[in-house]
Amino acid sequence: MSVTAHAHVDDHEDDHVHHHKETFVTKYIFSQDHKMISKQYLITGLIMGFIGIAMSLLFRMQLAWPGESFPIFETLLGGWAPGGVLDADMYLALVTIHGTIMVFFVLTAGLSGTFSNLLIPLQIGARDMASGFLNMLSYWMFFVSSVIMVISLFVEAGPAAAGWTIYPPLSALPMAQPGSGMGMTLWLVSMAIFIASSLLGSLNYIVTVINLRTKGMSMTRLPLTIWAFFV
Image 1: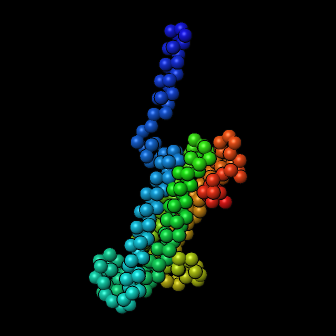
Image 2 (image 1 turned 180 degrees about the vertical axis):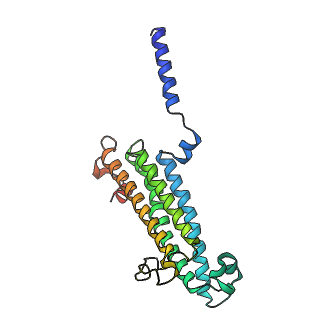
């Protein structure tokens, strides 16, 4: 090979390395790598899980000892726990947000987003998801949805308090109880973004499994875990 050819190859390799050089932001924050995104889902899901568990402890302590005064309640919740006893509206609000967090943000997105992103490419022989950008976007919509749900806890009138399945008329009439106003609105906004996130993630999973399977892996040869994610 001539000197000119060697120089051309070296320049090409330098361009290739430079093109793929990652910064802290692109590698750990706005990553498009399926393994990193699975870690982001896991960390966010764990944080939301701890928040959900904390709320569960509060209302279950009050349920176990009805009318009992717990000074820590007043410290944490202020006017929502006068004298250390949970206000009835706040009790229902804690049940509502706890159920929402555990079902949607921990089980549905936290665990599914973690294991689907981690295992699908590895088990079908693909390098990554079909769309790294959509994968990243799906996570960050999930994150924004989580933040809005947590913010709803600090609304002056109180968070959504319509039961974790959002029973009407408590969820439909602002005058039904304090949490049916702004708290309910934030709950709905959070869930709308969450649903969009889940849709983007699901489309990515389906396209990846259908189009990026390794050579020789038919649909009937897919691992059972992939069928579980896929179906």
